[in-house]
Image 1: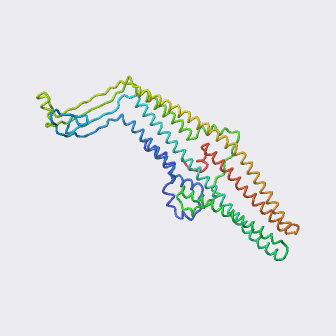
Image 2: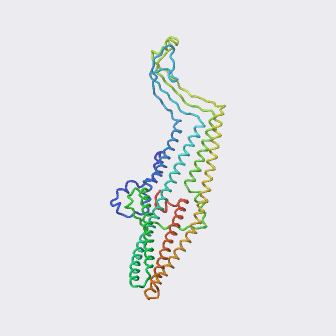
Image 3: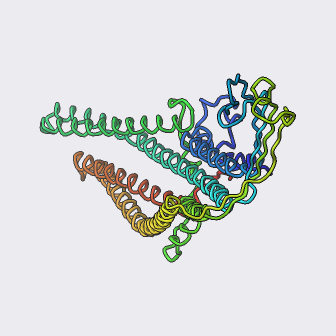
Length: 439
């Protein structure tokens, strides 16, 4: 497989499903599953496309260094009139036609530069993979949060219906002299709070739809989530060493380590620039007969066709500038090594923090769920007592408000737990498999 085709196979991870997804009929009318949203996001991602362009640039830099071993030919001409001695034009004798060729034969410094460029190309491919994982994470989190708000909006609409009914009941009770007129303000306050929550939920949902539209290329108005398309999150075992796994498989850390190798090759190339090198060189020139050559060279020795073929051998033995450049390259290698270590330590710490926070957030979600169940049971019990005449309407309304608050807390706790687990999947390299994206 050619190097260019290897680049295409890597970047195809981000553009695998282009074309066919847009030719499906009724695209705007159908709900959007999570897997399809991720596939479209990878197709349209500007971040992944920019990372792919960086990989292409790194590959071009590798070819530029490698191709210095291939002879390069330059065809040209240096036409001109001579007065007196035939001086050179740009370092060469005036010639009707000239052909120059040059290439590296033995060059230890260039050999390491080629290795450095090849290694940097490999690091750029890992960065593409990391950017694609970031696109998947952003899309999944936006999709899950939008699903949460859509579910919440359905619940709020039911609350709004109940609050309007409560206002009507309170009005009737005030007219009958059962309730104090102040109770009307309390009922209106409850309705106003519900309308505020609906406005906040719709605003958040619109922002998330706009974000997903930018990710997927679909119209924002056509985006509707399918909660059933979200796969179940895998169990997180606290005894597993997920930090070590993250350090081992994370592409950003691996790219940093590969970059260290590239910098090491560059530093060694700067040191080896003081070693002897051998280049192949050749030149052919077709000289003219009107540049006074016959006047300044021995009669009969001038000929129009001239050629030179050989090697250029260099023995650098004293260059303080090159020595300083090599010391600077050593410092850059040390900097890259320490940066890679810092990235590895930061990822390990962040993964451990996520692993422990998942346990805490799972417990918080269970507490919120139990509190909601208790509040719902109290509401059901008060409804029975209300029907039996042993509870007041205001007791029932207070219980309904408390149940709503517990439901809101449950939704927030569930999303925070999902966010932490999805982020942990990204850190351990399992997010693509969980989202159903083929590599």
